[in-house]
Length: 177
Image 1 (spheres, one colour):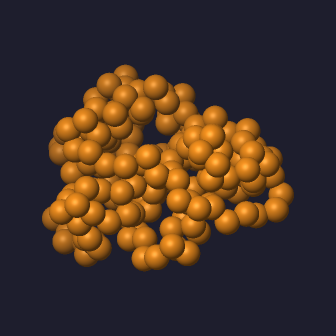
Image 2 (cartoon, helix red, strand yellow):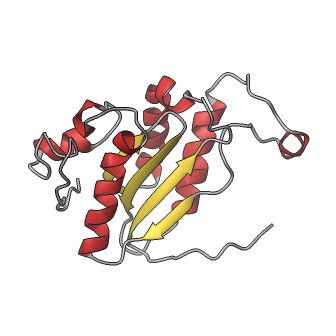
Image 3 (cartoon, one colour):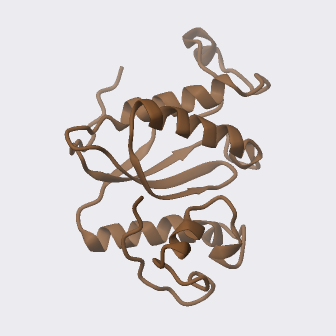
């Protein structure tokens, strides 16, 4: 098994991208949004983390998460979220021979992309990236029109104005729980 070098900073804040194996034309994540939310909630109960930002697109998601002091085990959390989600979906996807031998489903890409947030400017940039992503992908014209995002929660907390991401870019401030 490969030994990927990962930034481990207990109690750190990280940006993640997690994608489906088959991305082109796939809408499994938004079609099964309730199951994805249930998967995340289940894992958070056993292995807590704070959600600063989260957006779910049809075939991938981005988020900014903070882990408890002394804990940087995000690989466990993502493995459990992916497994819970996959286990509760009907098995209709193609399974390669390798995945069949390993007992894996053909839903998720094996790897995740992670980035340790370095400072306040990095945090703001990733918060904005997460929330603006549906516009960037042409799914909506305004950030506020995408329903699968923490943007609405951040607006309620005064972090973003409701019209942010509909044209002019505005820097975000902290949006934790």
